[in-house]
Image (cartoon, rainbow, N blue to C red; front, side):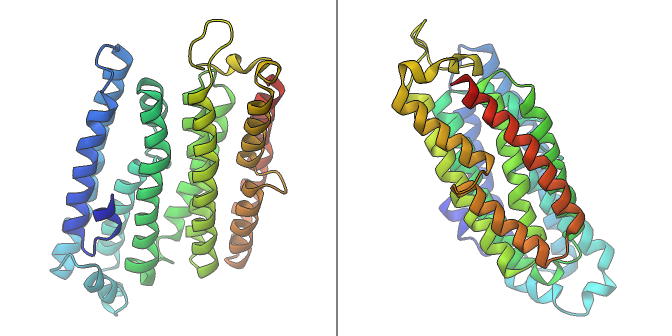
Length: 317
């Protein structure tokens, strides 16, 4: 992860991603006795191989056009007049690289694996996947867009907006009907990625700061949620919490923990004056600055609907 976030060319970035992915495949299949765990690991491995193939195809297009894989050379090439001569090839190369990362970040339209994998793997590893790995890849993705692709960011804005709105929709509709806690968190995280992409699609310094702020808030709230999830158990059968129905009358037995969980969920929902609201507020400011009016209107509607299922869990508590 440290090698990935500090890499300065696509060759070292690819090696770091593959080294990271190989360890994640092992972690995903650590519960060898469970059929669901094995199924999750196979899905993650096979789809991860496809995404890596798409990413490498984009990198090979860059090498064919520029003759180098260094980030600085690519940045200079995208800032020159050659961008108009090789416009289609460059857009194809950038799109392939972005789609390779969409899988790793679990953004639309590469989100299909998330719910199944999160449900099947060991809960502490689910927390590791949802927080540490996702934040690491998101930080590198921010570097890639605002450093390497900055001169061509306006041309790929439509791809980022498409992925942002799609992630919000999938996260919203997917989370509403879930009964399993880990599947719920998977779809909620897809929704959160959609909001982070809103800042990137703004193509401005305020958008970058807003996305970074939202990543930090997402990291804190997710860490809080998983800490509570791992430290508490069902009162009736003394097992770890697995379904949302396990939260029924939770505050009667764990009043203090119930209060902490309520605050965490309200922050995830983005209700004022909590952290989630502040993060969304700055993301909307950057979107207003970028004139993404239709996207703001859609995301506001989605925010209202997503608040429902967070409040529903608090009602259970």
